[in-house]
Image (cartoon, rainbow, N blue to C red; front, top):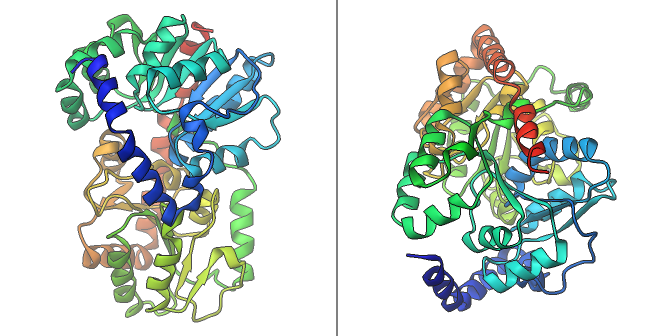
Length: 422
């Protein structure tokens, strides 16, 4: 497949795109809003020039935040345009940069030549920075036509994804050849990009900027204060974060088993997607005394589950816990960021499906900071072990924090690479 055929198929598939938006809007009404932006129409007024950063959703937006703040400081004369694809990502961008007048934001238009061209003519960036592996052939080609350098930041490419791209070499090779910088997390990923057609001189191993996560010095004191307010300083508290459909039932089954041995244990359950908040609350409330975080209600002694149904609070919810399970890993979703709980010195547990974070998972596993489980029984047993052997929990947490410190510096290497393109 080449780009012409890809573009034709994309146009033919627009009715399916519209149907998908409609179906998603039934669960998350925000998908029915700002549709014009997805076709580069009704874009907000923007300062031209500067840097365009694309972060597809919440996770990428959070990962991009330190880089964006560093760019704001390094280039005080330049505006930065941030795009995303999801309402939750949009909400997160606006919350993180509400007080920064040089940040401008809209949805990224669909990957159609005329929409991509209209967007670029509206923004006229001097540099495009795409987070992780959100590769859109027409956007990249339209940048190349206009002489706009394109960088892929914090890039990751699993072996499975590389095989998928290789099947469409006629589309992938020209696209990668048009990129100016591919800043990858590991040498294995660098070689995959080279094999797919990226120019060798443009591929640089910088490491993962997720290791450069900075923790607000007030985060842990705030968490301790809230636990004292709940009178929960002595209760075992564990968190299951970024869960997907199919995982919540397993987690609640594990919690039920845990309560047989530690009747005062508290579970903080945080679904990945906000459209699932209500259904997961109903699932929890049918089995346990449950409080929604959004209610700001105090926890009673018999509260067994706190549902994390707020946005932008995941690090704080991690800080409230003693043990962390990271979701998207009991189902074949590929996992989520294991480094956020590790940065808080928490012992980390996951399921077996970690193909999006193989190298990071291997580092944590080899250091003794990560334990993988397969089911509710295994999860309950591991949580119970860490409660009853606090020295093991402390050792795992310290090991994870050490891995974080040992691998920092990727952000500075990335900024140096971007600086050569600005």
